[in-house]
Length: 382
Image 1 (cartoon, rainbow, N blue to C red):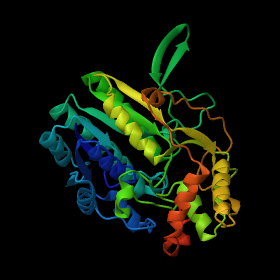
Image 2 (cartoon, rainbow, N blue to C red; image 1 turned 30 degrees about the vertical axis):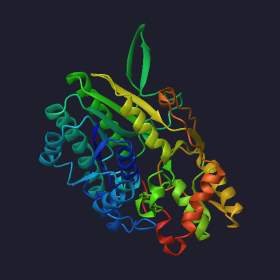
Image 3 (spheres, rainbow, N blue to C red; image 1 turned 45 degrees about the vertical axis):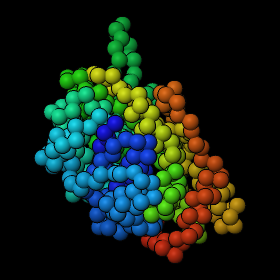
Image 4 (cartoon, one colour; image 1 turned 180 degrees about the vertical axis):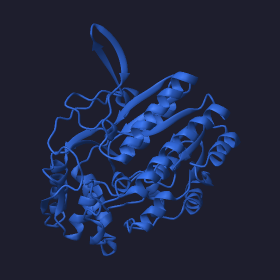
């Protein structure tokens, strides 16, 4: 297939581009380096440098023999976005191209406005690019489990059947996001559902949990092809932050009570999920929603896993609870369905001690580059 990978410079975008190119697809990698620029502006640089997209594509070509075309431009610019669809008329689009940080979206007015305008305009332009130039195209959009929030009922895969006053109907599962970033994802889903049912487009919305990992088949060919690794409070996940704290000798900072429960996913499984979605496209006029994670556990459980892996390496890892900078429930019910991707053939990679040790070993190689100032919370919801 001819595939556009939007947001291809990101933690997920670049491994996805390589994986699909290695599988024989014609891949066009698109980005405007928004995440790189925000990271510089907020002193949230990754632990180790990554070449830019054109350099990465050249390295990948040299070691694999496979081509990845690169387009640099702003997808929030309608002329650029619609021009891409007119030029390439893709069979499928993988849409990662959004400002991806919840803390950044809560940092202040300017950051909130940029997140809102960027994320919604990009999704709107992608939809219209498909409508005007590739109406049979399958749009695979990265959503987030954070759209659902933490309801006191089971989380279904995107949809919920409701019985009210003796009548039944099926609706999008109620969303109650905990940040402006996650709220833009909710609005994305609503936009997609409107255009699917109005114009008969085909779309898959992948509600993904936090992703961890540095290893993929392609990244293992050359260290320079690895994904970016942020450990700061703006772009870094709890997994990355805990791993770096373990190496740096800083107690693992559990926010509040630590009962916050989420569904987690290995980077290798993200690649599997995208491949499975592409091989099994949504039907025309269908918005297919799949919850994308393989296991769920609390922040406290995550900290204990990292502590155990770190102690195995002689790091003497400590855990410390700190005031929660976010506004969120710290002790809650959480049970989310996630059978759709398993039924398509997902073969999970779990967060074993060996997996965490391998990540710790990579971080140790860059221990001198760790900035402790980037680890602690710099953004507060209130």
